[in-house]
Length: 429
Ligand SMILES: [Zn+2]
Image (tube, rainbow, N blue to C red; front, side, top):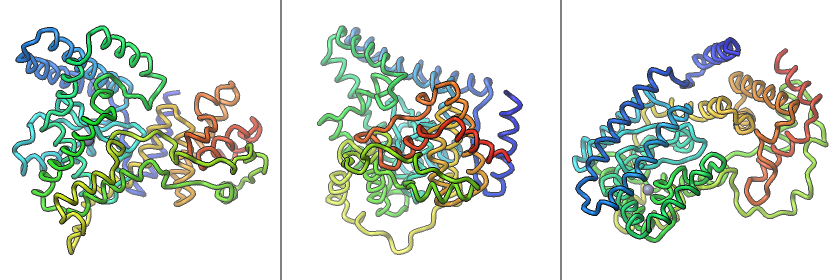
């Protein structure tokens, strides 16, 4: 098994160098331990800073919620869900430092982590940690947008928004209620990815009037930080527009596309693969494969743009000569979707990995993507053989997923074992 893994990585690395795509891998145990130690130190320091709160019961409950948060970060490290100690981390840290340099009011204890999670998002965890999802880079088209998102998250930290929300939550709940919620969230944690990962995230990002007001505050202070950096004001609007549209799937794949793709793989599609029940009669309510998230939804991005424009009219238009993004940004942006295909493969989300690879290959064929498509089909063949296809592909769900994803799901579930075998063989030859 291990040798297969090495061969796969070897094959991939050949292609990467030809295309300047950089894929980051999982880490050695030693590195994981180092990162965990660092976070343990951060935890002790942060929790000790809470001791000034007078109410003993209150401080205990606040600490319990943050303890849970650190446990969650530890679990993420164990499950290889974070990318760290990589050139991409260095790049984000450099951007962070450049923001802090011009904005001395931002706390010094900021630490940026990169998550492999397959969604366009970034979070502040309230104790100085900012988590940026690698997949976010795929959605942005200029470095300034990434800088604004970091400014926004740093503003949340500067304003101590998460700690404030947690304190309010503790004050307004008796501990019995709190325990019940924690228990419920723990139950949901592993089987429902779209739910908040822990109580802290639930409290900090739930859609409430107070949290909506905090978003606007973080936008406006974030823009103050950003405006000191000599970057294009208009990119702030662009960022919010991108987040607004991020729940609409940018790319899709049709029956005609599958026919074209399969011809290029020297295969032929069959009509019955794409047969589904009166598919076209349904109206799609929500044009997304994955549920939308905090960065874009609370509150509505159009309101956020309007508030910012009222306050700072200069963000309405672009500066005369927009400086091009750094080569480093372009490299990581271009790599993000490939990284995501790899992440989803190693996380055993073969359906997601294949779907992303097919969409990208449809737009821009390349041998690296073809390799991932083949590897995923092999896994799905094995899954079909052991009656486990359900584990890797979501069933058609008209209300929840896009037409394109539902067609993909239909196609995969309609493939017979011998169809899958033929497909796999063609990739191996
Ligand atoms: Zn925010």
